[in-house]
Image (cartoon, rainbow, N blue to C red):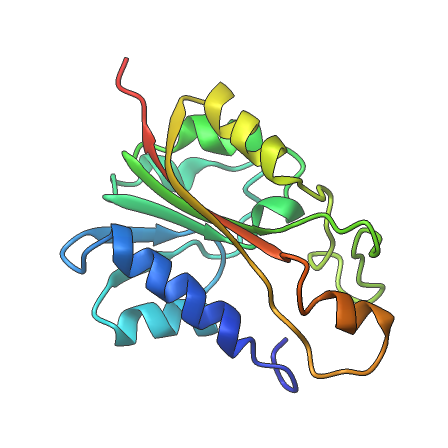
Length: 175
């Protein structure tokens, strides 16, 4: 997936945000298969367990297999049909989630060759905030950031100053 365009700026920003809220003594369940960013988290001293490729829309058993201190979901919720169910099933008290933001100059992404590489949701920040609120999470911190690409064109130019990603740290509201 990152053969030609490793997202160094996005990974750096995400790691700084994670370190701001989570310490390395806490265990992390990272939604999504082992990936370059989960490798970076491990290299930085975090204890990370990834999901194994199961379809989280229909199978949330991973949340019953032992409670981790933190759940991370980096650019995965836009691929899910039902993020509401996943957010209600999480047993951890802390959540770090990032999403690509819906952009007015870019339509929803859909790979023609990989059925898993498609966006069902194109979130605006308020939509993710509302989803978290409705599923019992309190947002403690949030940031938007750009991720320019080294291409020529109108859309790449807009990506220099239009926030592309939204990252949130939330804690479960105790009932």
